[in-house]
Length: 305
View (cartoon, rainbow, N blue to C red):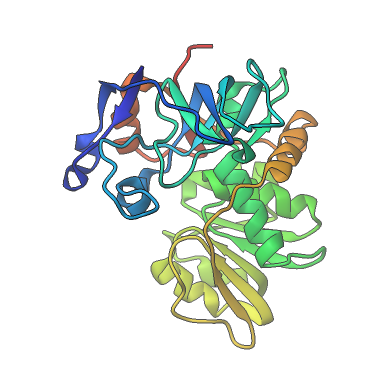
């Protein structure tokens, strides 16, 4: 099968090449998915799990990408809840070969059924962005109706979903980003938008929750905006400062089949719109990793729809 692989950590994006790999094996409780569309995170070539397995052993050549939408091609021993030929979407394991391939093996519990009226490209944009946004806002920050949440990167893959979920929950949403992101963030439901490049962050006022995807100075400055008892949630790096009388939480998204199914139903009902910024063929994956920043999520189309 064709796959995007890399085996030189120091080479970075330049090390991404198309290669032929053996068809993956479905272990116990696995399924093999014929991948139609895949998502990736630009920084994942720096993640330890990209290069070693759960025991710390080298597993190069490695296939990156951790979001997928496709069709079940094979069931492993003991796998239940899914059938061959079924449309599915979800997450691949952090320490196994990923989704930028024609076929990949995935734990069945990491996948959710996909309705026939949802495009694979849309579904592939949902797993990391949707689960990260939900878990950050509600599982970790416990966002409630009437609170104010500051969402950094409001036009990005994760931030754009967070804006919509927070607004639907009855929160006041202040989005941030670059000037060109303003219209999209407001269209998605943000009540206000602040241009970080123009130094507008201080205009946010006091907030109950900060949802951060940037880290660094932006995260540090945002901590001072949190009301007593509030929460900073970040996926960028463990925070070095905590809000006064509040909490600071760093987390890594976890698979959740039930929540994936719920998010997909929200998309079908028109209550949630994953933002697909660009769609590129598998052969252009390296260019997509290195490409200019676009709003939303870049998706790799493995099978042309």
